[in-house]
Length: 403
Image (cartoon, one colour):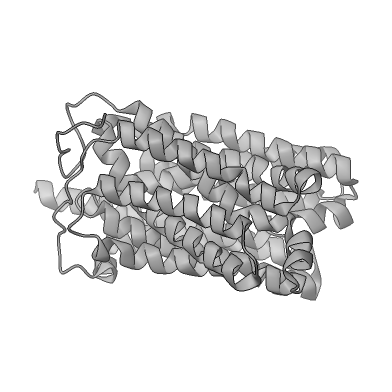
């Protein structure tokens, strides 16, 4: 049974950590991310079954992303007076309904409606994640909780596409979607049993999430976040054609490289918590620079299968673990505004992914991998510079407060 004691508004300092709820949230993240990207490996059978083109079927991802942005910006305001436990349970229930609706859709319109619902669940769930983590564990354990939370995301990026392809080939695309419904049901029951009541925290300011950008540290930190994700997806989106045409690997080697990238991401997510607890801003400065170096390495050594394989492992370790750093920064920078900040961050991340993928596609079509990957390197270096400015600004503010 859930606890009847309301959690404090900010980070918990003395209460024992509720790791069961954190792990349940991680499982929920896995189901959400797997649901979001499941259509990638199933576009052909979805299009054939619902009598649309593959390009139209691909809009399923655009629809979920668009509704994720809207939910991340607006859900906090709409639910400002609700127990956060109830909101989170409602979002998980929405994920369950979405999967069922998409899997049983008699036509494309109903299928897109299901995708819209998963977008709302994604935007709301992610925007609340940092604030919820702060209320489930002591302050010192927040980086570890966010690392566990993001582990579900890392695992989904490893298995979602191959799992969808496998299940779709064996049982049809509808069964692939339905297989995630029991996972959502497990998450719903687990969270109902483990989450405490969490009264809505009083928000500082006037309720406008964009007002947070008036704070220099917040604006610089979110700029660093945007540049990082834009740079990452300018390159990452086009890894497959790069590996096939430049490195020259066959499908088995390609699958092995992508699997190694995903497994390295799991390792990075597990390892980054301790460095973040000790030196948050230095990690946010160094990680993009290291990833930029990997991108430059892919340009220089992309024709070598062994060299590219090693660089892919480094990319997975750094790129998958980095979001833990940005969410930890958010939790520390906006302890009393984590939900509003989380909504703004989710919107910025979704838009940055879209812009990065679009920029990379234009450059890849125009000149191949060199200009696309080169642009990614530049964006990642700029992200490091923005993080460095944020660190200096935060230090100056601490010095002024202490004076």
